[in-house]
Length: 91
Picture (spheres, rainbow, N blue to C red):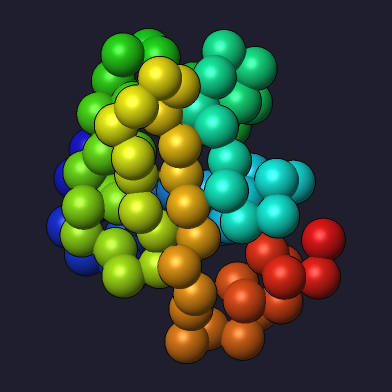
């Protein structure tokens, strides 16, 4: 699964799920056990692979930042897409 192109279904799904997760935490979501489980249930891939995909996606994204701390955090930085912006900001 490659997330290089934002037009791929996997990248779109990852973007939407990270936005929803960030919305639950006002833009700054920890990637702890519970949140990894929520993402895992969406993609049904091994959690080790999932963290790698999140890392790859956020590295190529202007909308999200992944901090490598304990626990890792996904931070929403803003979007030009009004739906993603609304989703995160209005929660």
